Image (cartoon, rainbow, N blue to C red; front, side, top):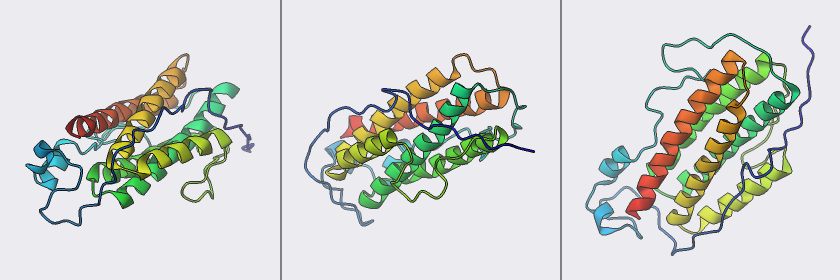
Length: 225
């Protein structure tokens, strides 16, 4: 019989540390017309919205499935996780939920498809992590939590800071996205160190590749600002 193991979900110190806020003028969401969005550069306004988004969409191009594998690949075999690695796995669920909730909030505020598309990818990432939580009998800290609410106070504080950073302007939202993806890459890289469980390594490796693509997408948008 499976035995539920309650795992503390504290994120390692500094894993989601947030830098300062880049404050610029507010941006009005594009309602879908041909007029450029306020705050766009000349080079941005010369592209249609669809053309620009196609260049910098942030999709998971290699097709990560809900279980964290790439299209055509089966989830690797189960291994063994230490107590610390189980705690890290639980914290990964909160990080993926943070990304989803943050980008969803920004997608509702700004007519920039990169947020909507990456938020959709984060839903798949959270499902992949939940598959591992179930495999290893680790309590899911995100169950029953509405958007913007988290079990770990440190994760909650990070979400609140990033959300505030992005509420004032599109530039601030893009910077918040870059900050999160940079920190997520560092957290995943650290989590992979010393990890031997094949399925967990597979999922983390795929999540790392996805975060690198998301970071590239945000950096492209920031460069065009």
